[in-house]
Image (spheres, each protein chain N blue to C red):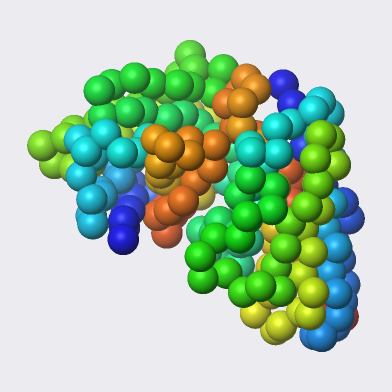
Length: 109
Length: 121
């Protein structure tokens, strides 16, 4: 099983700042198979990034993804109030077919 | 645009079977364009994939739950269902249905709003 470890667990920043969220895999993951989701309180996860760096239509361009192999990053260039949420990375391809990281909570400082 | 909506009891007794249904609108289960999935999230915790089903009945389960899970599809009602047997308190969670496109099975495009199921006597 590929384990995804996200860091930090909690990130405290102010609106307007830059956020960098990390997702590290226990084994190499194809970039095509790495996605990022945003989950606001009481809501379902929402797909932000797929294929490690492809933004879903309608997602603001302040969100960007990068990385390959075992290290992936989600960057939010300038935080807006609505960006404070929990973010999950997810991989596909190894049994179990889908695994998620434990999440990074982005909170207002 | 696809819309998914979970339904089912919010409370299940220990050792009984949890049963949920996901109703799909804005698209047809039998179109063959999507896989249909269940994902759960215990309170305050992360996400866990339960399983996927294709309209033809092809199913993939999380090995950690495989012995207790059945996912099925009802194309006539445009619904798919989850049954989880012999539940314990550890199965208390928000349960989401979701979908993946056949051409991009590696992530989940659309999610239902989720339904909370508590396991308690």
